[in-house]
Length: 328
Image 1 (cartoon, rainbow, N blue to C red):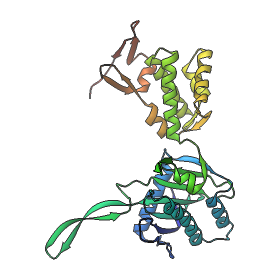
Image 2 (cartoon, one colour; image 1 turned 120 degrees about the vertical axis):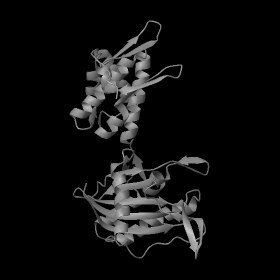
Image 3 (spheres, rainbow, N blue to C red; image 1 turned 30 degrees about the vertical axis):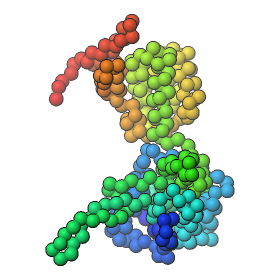
Image 4 (cartoon, one colour; image 1 turned 90 degrees about the vertical axis):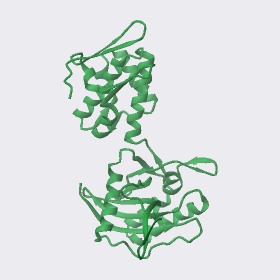
């Protein structure tokens, strides 16, 4: 995956006493340290299945600033400072938001230009303090890298008025209320569920549907999961809920009921989940008994009875028979 850093700058945002520091100089993107740090975090953002897509509201200040940047009425450094100042004002108003560094960088990825904004919250690390031959342990503040996770970040496409937006964030409790301050207060955008959230939602709806309409038959659950895996493999990670239902149910009425259940829950008709997300969510099937016994197996084993036989008895109990196993 080609990633080229065009510009980068780091601002220090404080609401705990010392003043914020807005950088007057861009980062040295030719530095190996700088390149490694930015590349690692931006690639993580691009590949994160938990990122949400979003649309800017028409009166978003960030959207307005980036429009001016694209029209060359603002330079990169000036734009980054205006972006940082908006976050700084939010943090000073709501002091429950912790201080952080803000990294703003313009990158080229797969022939497209993007602006990434990352809030780098500090983490405490251990180090040594040496005075002559006296070596002692101490702690210091560091930016997240190998063991640290950037929890608030966005990637914005710089392709005219459209400006596709993807982001990752956490909720925070501010003045007693749970707020998604990164998207709601800072970016001023409306988000859609992430690939991971959509996959989890499909799993939850499927489980509820099978419990209600299929007497909790584990074979039906496994068949639906297999249909999702097959659809993803054929369509390069894209999922059509109509196609999945058609593969999972021979009865037209059951197919319609299942599709309606997904739609009512908010699952989109066609989902670009990606093979990675689909495999993580659907490639393994789990059976859990009341006595605490859990059995996990590859979903594909339940597609036929050649290797795995699941029998549901009249009293509601289930027997599982594995066949043709070669132990390793």
